[in-house]
Length: 308
Ligand code: GRG
Image (cartoon, rainbow, N blue to C red; front, side):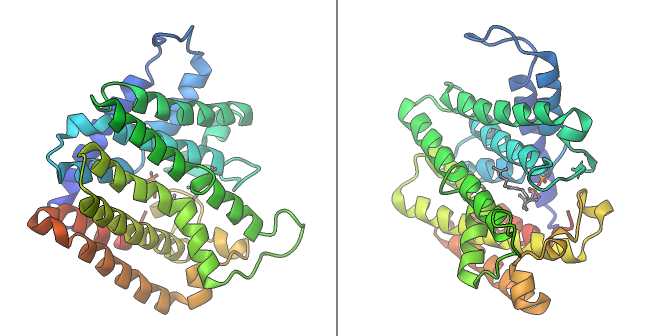
């Protein structure tokens, strides 16, 4: 990791952790009657103390390009992380990926039970939009609405949820058949939706918070798309080459499920080449911001080289 990236990732993680802890406190907020203790414990298990906090980091760093202070961007960053954590909890469920380990700890349905894990995910998804609706997300209602719309579009039908649906279909889940031999374009669509969309919206949120002009927003979107694609290929490579200890979750699952990924389709060497091209593409997209983008450029390289 480049020298100045690690402390900035750590700082983003600490700030996000503090904001999430506050949002997941036991006392009810205005309009709530009470917060069931088991639900809160499961939500905290799924959302606190773990993870790279890459998405919040992207929100904070993108917002910083427009002079938005970390404290002013952290509520939006925490909202995106809530959606991410919900997706991991639900993805780990027996009916989805059926994983026992996440972030080096038991998954939420293992530490609690399946019904509680479903509700903890639902609670985190709902909390994300609660956070974005509040004034500490941004003083301008128009900016808050833009954040809500962008996150909903990234998380929902044509984004992460839709991508997960395509993924389950590709595994051959619904016809009782064999996994589908997807074309490269279909694999790219699936991955851009399932994992890319949330990374893209993390960068876009910074532009929305900073009330950026169209050119700057388009540049951040292009950066996010290339970074998102790189992230997924790196994940596919880790699934082939990583160890459970380093990755903090099960590995070898794609091959076991006969899943079509860029690695299974292109082979490891070519996939590595595509990964390097995507990192270069992400870094080139930052050109309009001049010299201020060192951390985001380093983040693109980090995503490609990560071991967990
Ligand atoms: C269940 C609606 C629904 C969606 C699930 C994102 C997703 C869709 C599933 C996650 C499955 C998975 C492991 C995908 C690979 C890429 C990915 C999102 C890895 C986890 O993200 P990191 O590495 O995790 O940023 P940390 O723990 O660091 O936050």
